[in-house]
Amino acid sequence: MIQPTATTKDAQRRHALIEQLHRVDGKAEIVQGEIVHMAAAGDSHARASGRIYLSLMRHEESKGGGRAYADNCGFLCNLPERWSFSPDAAWYTGEPAGEEFLPEPPVFAVEIRSKDEYGEAAERRLADKRTDYFAAGTQVVWDVDLFRDECVRVHRKDDPESVETFGRGDSADAEPAWWMSVDELLKL
Image (cartoon, rainbow, N blue to C red):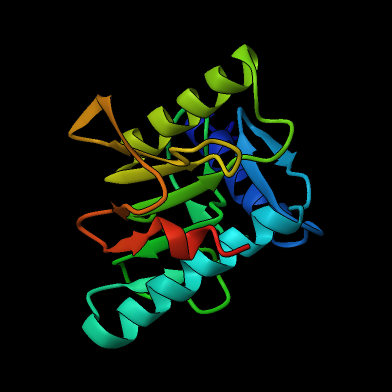
């Protein structure tokens, strides 16, 4: 009998976890070979996510060039420690996938901080996730903190150490995707 190779076993495990992710109730991602469940969003978090999605959808309808995605959409990737993302909003330029998860990460991803995403450990987790986004091909990641004056921090793959910050009265950009008024975002 021929024994499956490690690569075959890894591919089988990956396929099984992705199929399991399809059946998860709620939001989750595959990180370090495990399904990681994510807490439900609170009021302001959900409203901000919705406002970003609506702005992206208007951009899609008027300019095209990609597709807007709301919270809890699954995007697959093939990193050693991460196999999926589920951003709070996203812009995707690949082909539609029907009922399957999108086969690659978005070009633009939004991560809105929940009330437990503060402190040193949380900052490390968020930085690690941005590193994963960039390694997987995402070009721009927004770190949205609804409790700070300069609430949108823009991180770019081509210069991950630089951070642009935007607050009230500014228009935060996510080139190559689009831009949005921070005032509009904060109408919670």
